[in-house]
Length: 163
Image 1 (cartoon, one colour):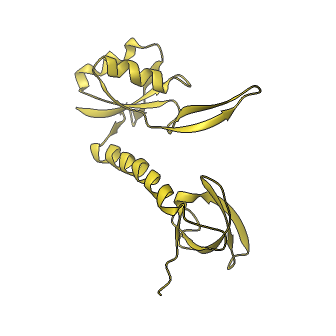
Image 2 (image 1 turned 135 degrees about the vertical axis):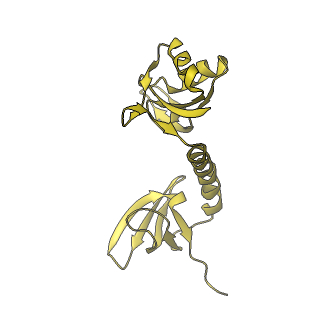
Image 3 (image 1 turned 45 degrees about the horizontal axis):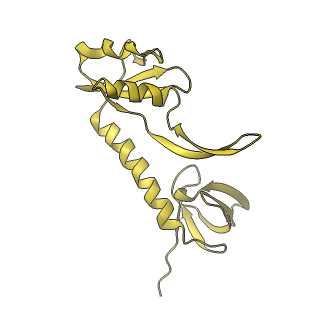
């Protein structure tokens, strides 16, 4: 059994995943919740992390079973063969996505003026000061560079001072 990557029609990831699970095929289509604004209402909806892609775990001989759903377009190919994702890579994605939620909860105690260190990206390990917080984002002042940036709360960690 191997993990393959299915390319789906746009906005069909969740439907394809559910349909394949009903057939007994193991799938992985991680999502997150966002609030979308329409002219007459706001609504919480689930959005996939990987737009138009679903991971499926099955044997080589069963690969054709996924095409029973009209939302499935094709397999993703790499160097002329269907792209195979290792179990460890799927677990790393799961761990990262699960861990990110914990980081958001862990760091919610931040307040304007707190000193933090960036965990990821081009400015990794840079120290900054919190200027403003929202529920998921934080605006930072980087005094050494003279920049203000906005990033996810999960991308920063408070600087602990010895007391």
